[in-house]
Length: 214
Image (cartoon, rainbow, N blue to C red; front, side, top):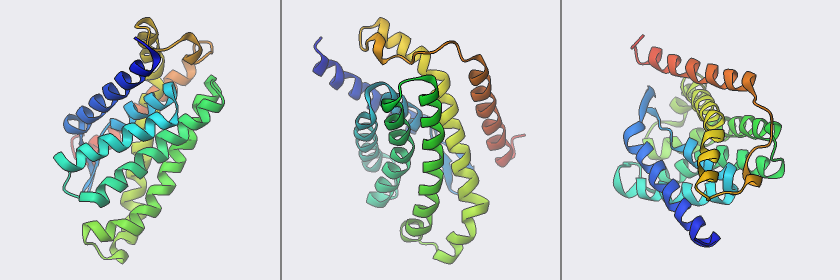
């Protein structure tokens, strides 16, 4: 299989997995805001094959989502793309420039901060249009609702991406889809794995508490 065919195949595979994550993985967090894990898949694709892969997969999945299960039309499509790309493309762009453990951590942290800031701004500007809420009401929800939601989303995305990157790249390398040079070069970051796991567990517990489960 040549490199072009591999790229098309892996892009299609990422799109399919990310869409399945949207369909079966949506979790209510607060108010009408729901978390789905598709950004993890899209970010992993970007870390392995570059930020353009994240962008392409984000657009394709968001388009499919819009015509199948979304009720928010083109505006929801744009919000999905902006949210995913602000995290995934930022993280993968930084990692592309510095393919080390520190580059991955810096990329994921920067992507998390970028997504939180961008989505607070876009929720303030766009949510009143497609949700029909007065802008003043949306502004009052920014800190108590949108900020914690996006922080939780960023924490889950970054934590799961960090934990899954190594096993995913090892599997793809064994299957011949990537070379050794595309793998993160570092010693085993036990402390960072524990930190990422702690962040994921904390975010999950917070979501469960928000939904009255615990």
